[in-house]
Length: 321
Image (cartoon, rainbow, N blue to C red; front, side, top):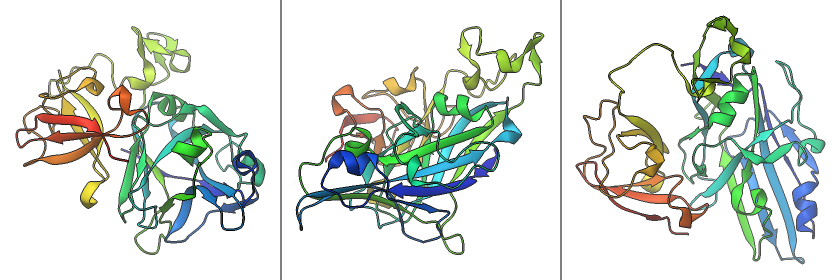
């Protein structure tokens, strides 16, 4: 499974201004390739010490995937090191498509003009609702088919923003400092954000058809296919998805399997497993795992999934806010 570091990474933000729209749409500074151990990644702030003012910060990443252009990208995840400098309790973020940082294999540094118009707020790259915890741990964010299709073109550019106010353009109604921080200190416990994925090289053609012109095989999107004419009995009838487990300092994300198809339809009494053969139930005792993409009535709030020692889901509900 290849790991590819971001070629360019940085943030653009606004300074304190009295207009929420100005704070959200007009960048005043750009920082590139920062190296700190506790760097603000995303921010949506309102303060009223000297009159009501707002400011917003967003981070941008550009990945050179030219070595995998034309290949099928699957199991794609964004990986970074989060810190306890994040707002207490953590926050939901959005991972969105971006056209910032130029193009090609080397890209370019961020400028203030990249702040707003380069973000496609309608195209989310996250498989689940992404979350940053206030803990010094690795954060693994599964990315969706839209990200995998774009990654197969030879590059991927994305933006991280605070979700509740910034992504949704919802002006804060009271004072807040909603920030997410990450560790970029490569000399210590930090690292440059990277993508991990599986790349499948189909060759140049499938049944004499150029692979770059194929969108689907028998109605199945090419980006979701790992092989053709191969049957793997160890995963037949099992389906994987990701659970976030950011409570009590647990590992941010774990991969689980279920017999439910689609896996996002799991419910109370369904069993979750740690292996594709569905032989080892998840956990020992009751765990609190935050399943992202939960009940519709949770909206953007993560869904708490509790399991017993047999791996059975005993309850599901919206996480407290």
